[in-house]
Image (cartoon, rainbow, N blue to C red; front, top):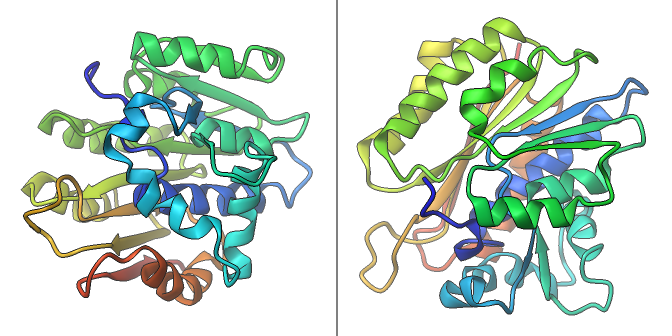
Length: 283
């Protein structure tokens, strides 16, 4: 939806969960010398200034990355994610937050490649500015990433991490995600697919993880959900938590989450309803 700008929600609890797991996935891929591709269907602006109007309007980053920024007891598993964010904040204060493609770029080696899609014209201009010096490694497309994903698969390297995190501003987007992923798995079953989704009251949002499990029947999957506050609290709007469904997750990620998620829940939780859940099927 062209009305949506990720700057309103940048750095919130959903970004923390998503980017932590994105970092761990790319670090896992980088254990081998063979190059990887990173494909982002909804790349956004690339990097965000937290003092600008859109981010300040909601201030969601304060209850997300802001809660982790000054803590001295951050678990070791979260340190690589925080290191990626700190690369955009060299003077210790929290002024900038990197979007998913910028975080991926911090982990990309010379031989790795990024393929980024963004439909919003303003955000695409910002995306071009963010990666203006990386044309040899990054290809940008002002286009619908879901509609164009099949043209990227399978990648020449046969190794890729695909992030799909639409705004879900319309019901159709939930159906599109399942349809596009079904096609992507047929074309490239060995890829790792990260699918972000909000925890909200809408039935299509609640049903998405189950649809991904039952309709796609992936051989290996992991579903992690983080609840930060009681659903339906009157003084709050938007999602009460977030989830990430991963097809072909990195080995050992489920064990790491069982250790990290209690701390992350405590750090980001806003009331007594805060909690988490990790489900997986990894043969």
